[in-house]
Amino acid sequence: MGRLILITNDDGIDAGGIRQLAETAKAFGEVWVVAPESQRSGKSHSVTYLEPLYVRERPGYMDGVKAYECSGVPVDCVRVGIHLLGRKPDVVLSGINSGYNISGDIQYSGTAGAALEAAFWGIHAIALSQANLDYHPVTDRYLRELIGEYIDKPLPQNTVWNINFPGCAPEDCKGVKHGCAVSQDDFYTDSFTCKTLGDGTVEYTVVPGRNWHGSEGTDLGAVCDNYVAVGTVTNVR
Amino acid sequence: MGRLILITNDDGIDAGGIRQLAETAKAFGEVWVVAPESQRSGKSHSVTYLEPLYVRERPGYMDGVKAYECSGVPVDCVRVGIHLLGRKPDVVLSGINSGYNISGDIQYSGTAGAALEAAFWGIHAIALSQANLDYHPVTDRYLRELIGEYIDKPLPQNTVWNINFPGCAPEDCKGVKHGCAVSQDDFYTDSFTCKTLGDGTVEYTVVPGRNWHGSEGTDLGAVCDNYVAVGTVTNVR
Image 1 (cartoon, one colour):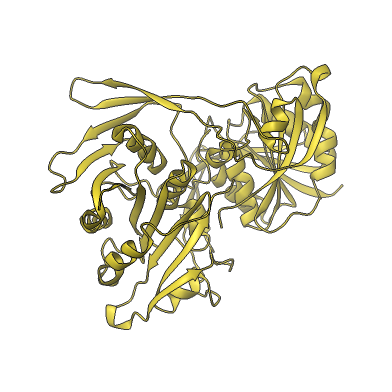
Image 2 (image 1 turned 30 degrees about the vertical axis):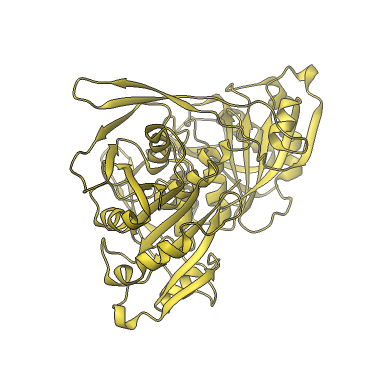
């Protein structure tokens, strides 16, 4: 196929999702993986520039795939990847995240952040996420056909494709909803628990919460209704 | 005035810019400061949820201002601030950042991230930034009148005001450009220097670069032409 494909994620280079993505992407071109050395969820579009990054090759990561781990966040991996390749790749695939990147999740997501960084460089990009598991059979069922459909499909400036696989059994999945809007429903209901420590410092721990009700036509609505959700996300710019 | 005003930033609670902002904001309502304990630039819309946050009151920070420092990033400070206040503030002011938040900068900016987090909660927000100094006399000249003009000025959903003060002498500043678009010019020219360490790890250090040429009508164009730039930024959603 001749495409040069850069793959990253935010769950770290050894997460199941990125291996599944790299394995599948080999059918579409030459695959390079540059990913965080460990978990970097919630890192959004953050970038490391006040301290150095450390990048190590990972020989034997996967047959036919060049792989590197990076001390930084997902956005750093895209920038390091462009440097390692010596040119912009034809496409950046980010994921497959363990956890949806829909509705308000997208703002915090390192998976989306990496794809949006690629868009910022004018590179075609797809963010991919699945319910809450590293690996899920619904993803397995639809992954290859959706990469095939969206890997070259044109996008507006500063915009990426965003694909979310629902957390249901394959036989319960109703298919793919294309053109989902980003849900503006009230999705996040995070709260804190607080504990006052000896010196008066208060320790805040996030208690994650979500409203699992999405409007018709949205990404959230689609996954709640057991559809694969495909839509776009556009940078803050 | 009766407004409840929450102030944060990404340069840390002891930066000059946030003190200047808090001092000025007192004329517009009751001011609370919740800000990172130290430098958190480039943290974008990232959020801390995999580890706890630590929050400490800072008695004596400023006359008539309640102040707290937080171990987290700017977005965390907005969320902690809402929790401390027991209700949503009427407005979030984020800054004054040392360094512009214009064009591509906005994507990486913790200053913008905090304001956009407020917007996500339905709170009116303004991000404020200045050239590259903690304090600048052009800011001093225009800060109070611009806060007055924009502190209640309606915004579309998921959108914040974004104000940037140029890095020129006050007598060279040509005034305020309202309604600036976010520049889509090719602004960032970051590169890396690389050093191979003993074990084969490569150390990457960012060499920041910028193209200081902005199109007419943009935030970048305005500050390059010695105007204060006022515009809006909308979340990725």
